[in-house]
Image (cartoon, rainbow, N blue to C red; front, side, top):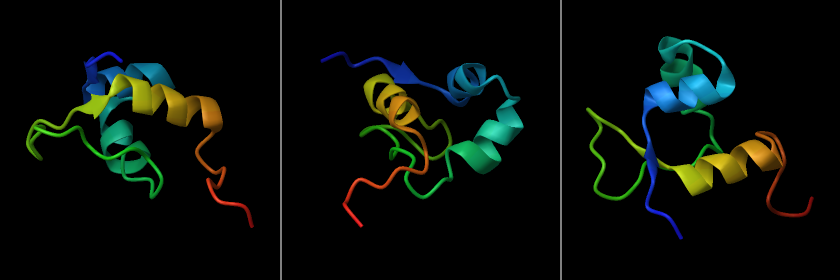
Length: 66
């Protein structure tokens, strides 16, 4: 497992949006991965593995059966 961390700028590039949209909408989605341990609210970082898994699964897919 890698310990690569992504910043808001990295997430914005993945989604091809500006930093503000990544900050105000994408990372605040209820099922978006939590910030990485040791990260601070002022300079949040997210696990690259968790974010890529989230993107691959799609933001609206439930993890529990309905």
